[in-house]
Length: 82
Image 1 (tube, rainbow, N blue to C red):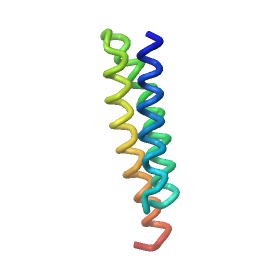
Image 2: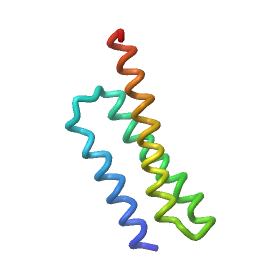
Image 3: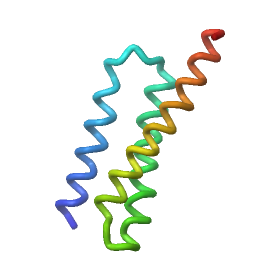
Image 4: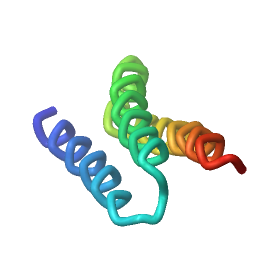
């Protein structure tokens, strides 16, 4: 279990930090980070119920990060007047 938590934390941190150098706006970056963290937590809880905590957390982080990034990008574009 400890190895799983370390792997999940490392994966989420890598995804979050890899987006800090992109030309995306601040809301996009914040959305990716927040969505990834919330998605990882929700995925871990749901995955734990089926005995696949790590897989659930990784899938949740990917889906949450994507959804958060899309939402944040829309806010950035709205702010810029696109």
